[in-house]
Image 1 (cartoon, helix red, strand yellow):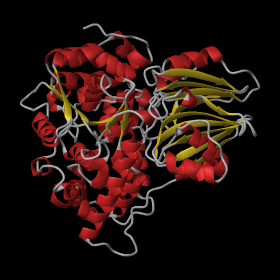
Image 2 (image 1 turned 180 degrees about the vertical axis):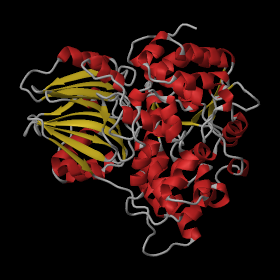
Image 3 (image 1 turned 90 degrees about the vertical axis):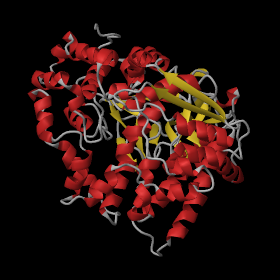
Image 4 (image 1 turned 90 degrees about the horizontal axis):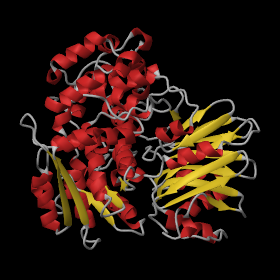
Length: 596
């Protein structure tokens, strides 16, 4: 829901309104329903609205409350806004709209920055307090909604996408060597505050950042995840019962906070199927959506067998889309142009193409992302658990895309750094409030890694079509419950045991007991034909050679036999290199196409 941007000056000069208009225009696809601006002197806001709650003009943004001396731009949804509104009315607040945006304004006036701890939802917002001329930026607990910023001694600029900040101009676009190391080690994850570009940072999840007009900055964490066992041990059945209760509450929150119909992205896997099963009795004529691609190298590129079964079982209004590989290749530049950060995961493009189709039918969909991280569904978790060595060694040998030595052989000396990723991962795993090694891993995944993969791509690729994707498995109450569970319970029966248990009797057993699938686009994994030639053209282009990022011997090795070089989680190393270079050419260099 929406795209936000703004500028705050620290040097007593006026903000650049022309730059703000360019930044706002770049967010139009995130918010096709309304454009608005606010000028508060040292501070200006831009906003593009996707109308989901309170479709009237009363909830247009920027929203200004002249009585409270507050102004706000907000992206996201506060699922418990009606409960908070009722509490605020009891406290004496009057409301002029019926949406969640005004609830944030009143909540801030009532409780200050601590208001974020009361919010159930996904959000990124900027709030200007005219009383003391301060600006507060905030981001939800899991970074479901993005918030990027560029800060120097004279000004702050912020936006929902990096492209918006680039449109404003004056950004240092040199490559950040630390981010580069993270990107190529953690399959494109770049933990906040870093981004690939030196001049742009991102607000960490679960944080607020306050700025004064004199340039003072205060960063605060307002939430952390406790991954320890409860004082009173629970039985397996008690854990399952608690999961059922909290999951039902989360799905209901995500369904009800909307004044437009809500659909489901139905992959045919356990997670999205469980969402359909829990919604079917509450939503008449439920829309479900599936996508598939052409098989490559004998790898099936759709899960229609199971999504069709689910749609028939629950009688949903099902929409099934089959995309030929020729269309995938043709549309890749469009998808890359919408990536706020370079994202080589295969399903990024799938989400982009699916989002285009789904947006023709609904404005809001529920998606199953986050369930694997929260409930232990990936194949590498038991392998890490069985491994020996330090926590870092157990983690890295099953997760890192490449060792530090290979990284040094891949990039040119100008981009060499120490093994910063190992240092960061070791520090994150060693944080307190985790009982077992896998508790440390799950916490790291949920609070940091997942933010960039897969959560970022879901927001990025759906909002590119004015489609809001909601992720009930990242309801913070549900995540907190799962974090307290023994890891062995989550890994039972191949992983995600609590979800399988609550799904029995709700969805068909064939879906629960099927082998785990992934959202496949095998043409980007088994690189051949036109896809290989496109990647060759990118990596041999004048722009790539001039950039001097990759060592040519490494590139030639991958090009000679691309299918022989896969990461530990089965990603194409060649596509990873090509995607980053293509992203830089499209989004930074401004080159729309690369000659074949």
